[in-house]
Length: 187
Picture 1: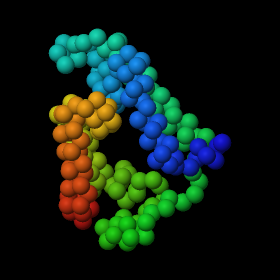
Picture 2: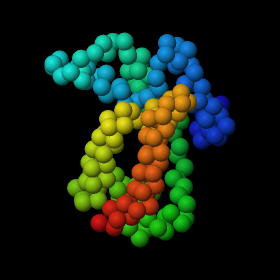
Picture 3: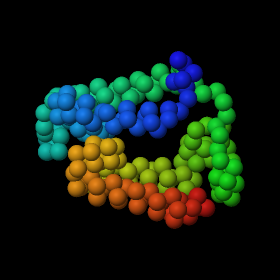
């Protein structure tokens, strides 16, 4: 069983499990699936200010904080009990392309040439980590939810704004990966 859990799950197992969260949450009290709202709930609970955005009954959404805590706990359990000790496998064509940008260290899931404390103080590291983090936060707030909330929950509920947001996520991801990222990596 442990070996089964260590392997990536095929789409025909993982996809339906993710898909079943939507009707399960709806049956459990008309709850919406999404992660980004948990930060708002934490701020509403911890910041005793008169900011209108945080003036709501956050206790009604405590289930979302339990859900996010479960994700964190699941990650901790997976790292400690189900480690993958094998080397990270990267497609040879991608390795060749990334080597042109000076990215050669694939000893971790994320290349340390890009995401690390020393890389943060370079132009490309700062743009990717700080600028990218800001844009993700801004986009999540502007779109009224995160990719999982719109693409999984919103599309399954046939919400027009979620379709528009998901199309924009996909177009932005395509543009970033193919047009902007090569420029940033060349810095």
